[in-house]
Image (cartoon, rainbow, N blue to C red; front, side):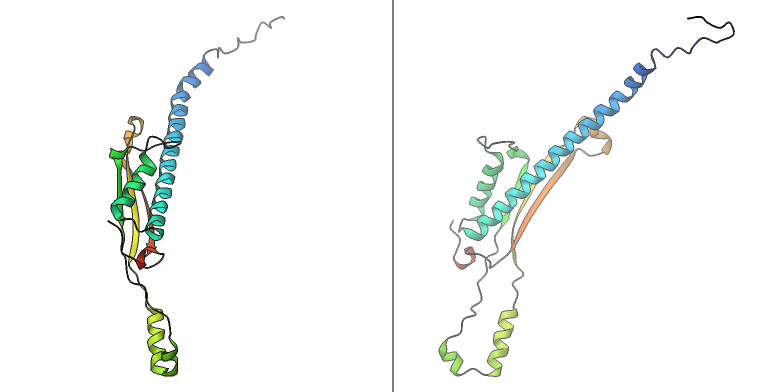
Length: 180
């Protein structure tokens, strides 16, 4: 191929793509690391939420004590035989609060029906509308250390929390005393 006499030589761009790759590679690594780390945080939150719901199921359907339920939750999350990811016991805080209350008696006997009056109807209505606002709950907190690449946030740790609540008096456990 012939060159024209008055044409300028082409610009040399041999190392341009190498420089661009060197500049963008740390950003790509940072974003990849951030996505993986936040995915771990989200999965941990999902595990904690499942364990909190498991704990409230134990509160409702069993007569176990708060300490026994706490032990079940810790084993659910931290036991080495778990399939999948296990959490560190030292970083996990479990709070189980069981507010047992008496159930209201809504039954009517035949003797009461014979002597039924409007005032009895008002009493029955008031007892049916009585709401027990005490709640039983399971609350879990797991502490993560912030990795060095994310230290610019100014925090040392991040806490992942999950809580599951139920109204006291629901389920079978409120009818009987809890076992110790």
